Amino acid sequence: MSELIRTITLLTDFGTRDPFVAELKAVIVSLCPDARIIDITHEVERFNIRMGAFLLSSASPYFPAGTTHLAVVDPGVGTARRPILVETGRSLYVGPDNGLLIPAASTQKILHVYELTNRSLMLETVTSTFHGRDIFAPVAAHLASGTKPIEVGREILDYVQPPFTPPTPYRHGFECEVLHVDNFGNIIVNISAEHVEELRLDERGKLRVHGKRIRLRFVRTFSDLREREFGVLLGSHGLLEIVCRESSAAGALRIKTGDVLRLDGV
Image (cartoon, rainbow, N blue to C red; front, side, top):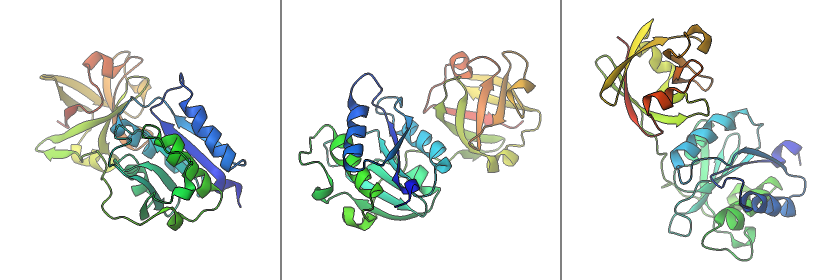
């Protein structure tokens, strides 16, 4: 089997203080010793499905065809929520059926979604609190070793849709949602490149947040702004970002993931 098909990525909200991530990797290499494991991140905010979905969809396009993506942000572990596999035209996504996997998979054309029901592909003991280790990791390892997606369980059509909403247009701009605040304090919103022309962002725009109006300049890169000046630019993932040069825009404006903002083009 090609080495590329043995690539497995990991994305979780587990952090690195506990042994949880090591246990995922231990299960994977026990079943697929040749697996090449790449960590996307284990610093997703705890239980924040929206953040995990955004980060997975941002990173996954850059991995080679045949990659198996294992993602676990799973506040519903042990409940009636289903474990699933999403098969796309390019990759496989393993994780909980809570919308976490769908934004990333949708960019690659979803072919099939399967509920993980084949017990022979899981650990002998499946606990009610750690499906990442007991279900998702062994299934990902088996898939990387050549198990066909159709072998994991029955196909389903009623999988949970992603937690994102599209931006809402109004007369002068869009009401948008904060998808993510990155480590630099840049505010990434759900306005894509295709909406930029509709915003009529030329030199100036306005951000409405917490009852205030903040003037913004639309720029190409951070250095087009003066120090600590607010601006808006098209970021590296094709989404608009509200930024503040060499400072945290999110900190200054007290904005967090999930907040709703209004961005005006005039």
